Figure (spheres, rainbow, N blue to C red):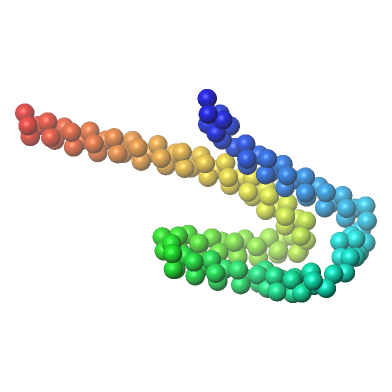
Length: 155
């Protein structure tokens, strides 16, 4: 049997486990060293090249990353434009909502996002399977009706 069919959520489970392990690691480092010392450990190695790099890459977090994505959709894949814009809007609202309820705590926000993903991915697959089944049933009924009509016209 195909491994993909036997365990369709294998990659999702691995990604979820890795995300939770990273969250646990961050929480442990914060508890062991505290916020100030953790910051010093992470940023203790001064590097001018990385400062230059992050000076520009940080701008992508301000929403500027959406510009090339929308431009790509406009120029090459117009059928993805509406879902991309909907995703941007949902992401923006979700981020602001989570920032408000977690009081801007990155650890709590990451934990909330991982939990949301852990719920949405299986739900998406179940909804997709349900919708496909319904569409196939509807298609069969339409074909059956067309076949009956053809048989009546011929016979």
